[in-house]
Length: 171
Image (cartoon, rainbow, N blue to C red; front, side, top):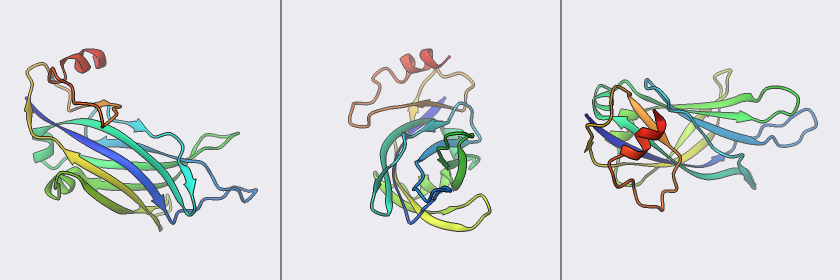
């Protein structure tokens, strides 16, 4: 089975102001998922305010099966959620990007900004992130799962044993 790693760094959110009843800025975090595969949701910490931006600079790594990538049946979904004290966290925006589209525009460290849509469908603000695909790797230890996730520090070297240790932890 062949796979690739997809390194994503959710950078910042620009032009997206959410205020509560007391007109305070909301604390927003992002959940990143790969739709079409299993076990693929990761969450950023709450963003830090920098003027009209919320900054994260939060790296993530996803492992994607090569055949699923080539069949164009995977979608990157980034949901923006606002933390609320007395209720459940509220969805305030989302971005959908086909993984195949990212793969076709991959040039070793691509940086993009995508339009955020509110739950009502209105465009509001831009979400910026960078991404990078690795070369295809072959592993006989991966069984039937479509994708595996890992929180990583992208400055550290990649796993040396072709994900064997990670895969044993995830099972």
